[in-house]
Image (tube, rainbow, N blue to C red; front, side, top):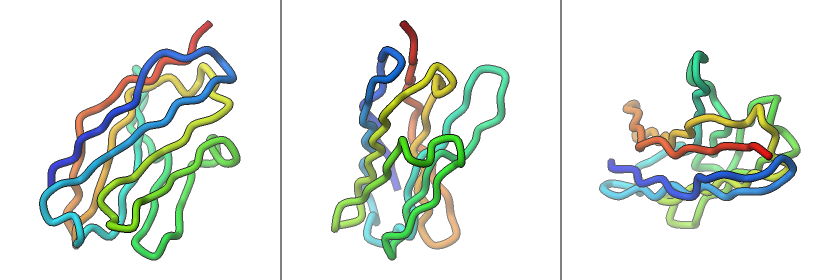
Length: 114
């Protein structure tokens, strides 16, 4: 499984960004997709995951602001990020799990600053 992430950038506090992750190669066998993030000096942390049944998990810090969605082919996962705060600044990594194996995409930088 190869993951291609896109959509990062610089945004002012209160602004919005949308991240997209596209999976190729055996995408139909993916049972969950989502996003993690890592800020400088911090460990990588879960942001949001969406499962094959459509259910989703979110970090407490992003609940109510971020929304994860997945296309019907289950090969693309998008993360809509609203009301962004400086604390959301990090490198965001796409993640997918196929059976019991996890896969990572390249990181995309999200910077929230005025």
